[in-house]
Image (cartoon, rainbow, N blue to C red; front, side, top):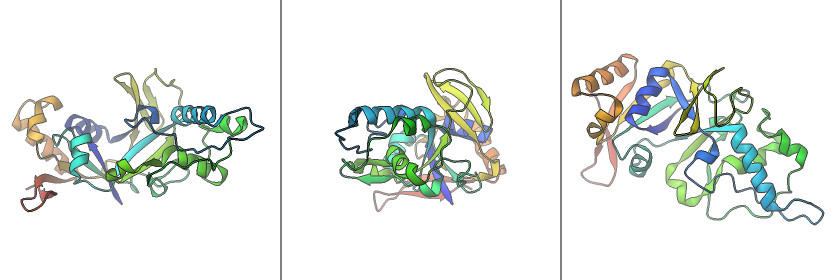
Length: 268
C-alpha cells in the first residue's frame, strides 16, 4: 500500500537522498490536544486525579515514542496549504509494506492499526486511572495489544473531528531506548539517525530506496526552488531526472478547471 507524506521541496530532497522518513514526538506536533483523550474517571480511593494521570501518561507516551504522520490523499488542497509549503512543496508516496512499517515486532503501532479516529467529543470517564507500575512501563517496548491497546489508542489515535480532512494514518515507534537524550545528542542509532531541527528532535528512519514510489510536485513549486538549495532551473531539472532514474513516478499538480479539486499530470 502507498501512503503519502507532505513535505517542503528541501525536506523531500533530503529524505530521498538519504532514504529516510522523519518521526516526531507528540509534544512537537501542532495540535495542543495531542495525547489528551484518555478519559480517566474519578476514583474515590485513588490518590491521583484524572488530570494528573493524563499529564503523566502524556509525558511518558510523548518521550518514549515517536510518530510518523502519513495520509491516504496526495491531492488535498488544505494539506498542500498546511504541510506542502503552500503548494510549493512535494508529496512523497511510500510503499509502507516495503518500508517495513507494517511489522508488529518493529513498530509499536504499525500503519495497518494506525488509522486516526476523529470524534466530535472526547472519550470521558470510562478508563480507570493507570497504576504507577503500568505508567513506568510506558516506553519500554510494550506490545500494542491486550491491556495496553486501549490506552495507547487513546494516546496516539484520537483527534478532534476538525482534523478529519487530513485522513491521517500513523506509525509509532519506541525511541526511549535510544542512547541519545530527548533534547540533546545526535547520531545514528540502529535504524534511526537522530538530528535536531529548531531545537526539536527528529528521528530519521531508514527505509529501502525502492519503497519511495511517487513524488507529487506542488502547483507553485517553481517559487521555492532557491529555498531548496537549487539555484537554477537546470539543477531542478537534474533533480527530477535523478528521481526518475530511481524508478520514482513523478506527477505535477494542477488545478482542475471544472471543480475545486487538484488533479495530477504525469511528468514527461
